[in-house]
Image 1 (cartoon, rainbow, N blue to C red):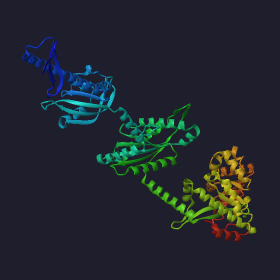
Image 2: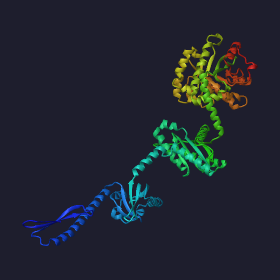
Image 3: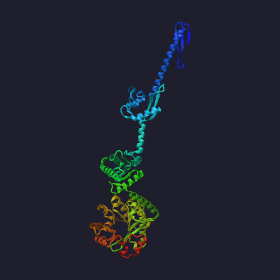
Length: 631
């Protein structure tokens, strides 16, 4: 206490201290006259000072609380305090922004009821807080207007002065943007961007799970590989936008064909996969169930599609690979269904085929044959045989060059085995150039021998080879390098070559004709020739297919076709030759029809170089078939 006095007045001062004894201020009392009872004044002042100190501390505490509350309101997160009965005690402005309720509206309300929390998830979180003192995790909550909110919560158990738990502090963060980003990342990683269907990665995962489930539950299933027929034509003619629109509609239709437990996926392009689960483990029943699903898909996808500005129809080809009791891998299933799908394509499209283990053996053999062919082209294992072509008077007029393959292990491989593989793999281009070059070399060598100069050389040309942009140049270069006379070279084309892009075909033939090369239309009558373009093409010869010659004596239809071909050749000013002539009776009937040239076993089998030269030099003129030349 401080006591002082001036000439005119007196004053008394008392320190103000907090509960810790720290001086926080001074209280002064000023008197206008001298002090007379200082002791009483001192005790009274101490009482005032004590009360003033307490009030100042209260005001300081209230200001601190207000500052803390202000800081909590500035937080972006929702900060909530609730009692153990989940009634709200504190609700900051972050909670108001996140949930839509004000603090006044929600104070005292049960938070689990207002936010419509998932009861089981909420109870698990509360149990973790009670036992461990805290919980962290994600929870879907509800806004005041009803929409869902993805939140991440950090809950802490709060204890009172007595050490008893009395409330729970929750800090909830809005993670909707993060969850949306995660969902988008997942969509891009596991779903097809165009159709929204599962992609290959997700399909592989689900298929693996389906196989495991089938093994565990003794069930069956099936994988359906679906490919749209002629989809490339749509893209090329109407554009990729229309193609994308079609794929989207196909995806929606496929989803309507299956159950909720099945999977529809897009592998890419026009390839889709349907995974059927929970089918019968009995092979017969499983096949029936898979077939029923596939037939429903065939029917649904064959209905017209409404594209931009047009109506379009397409069909699928479906391969089915059944599985039961988990007896295969995902890779096996995809390969098997893919093989079966190609069998459906081969079978005429718009159909379905089941995988047959025999298919795998055929495909493996084909792959081995393709590898051997590539090696054979490099190692020079191919050779040419030549089959004579003979005029009606027995005179040799030429030969047809035929490719043969002498395999070091398998021996002579039939053309019916390796030519289709060469066509499918594109090796026919390399093989075709070799055949043409070798045949022209032989043709050039004949020019040094007067008895052989007049012979022509017929060489088969595949569609792929003829359509090659470099084909005309290849022929010109081979003729120049070998020195073969172009007028003695005859290229044999099939009808399929002629009808595909007629104008381009005619242009290529005209370019080759300027080189002096002639043309023969092979297998005439087996395709779909049209006189409207046949007469425009620079052909020199029609070749009657052996299928008509074979039954010429027994089938009146074949005889009528032969008569028609001969008459047509005469009308168009073309030569005509019949292949596959094996008997004198066939030859005589062809002669009666007006055919004056022949090729077949009646005259000779295809011969290698040495045998051909021996026959050419020993054969008189005219050439008469001998019994030894017959099959």
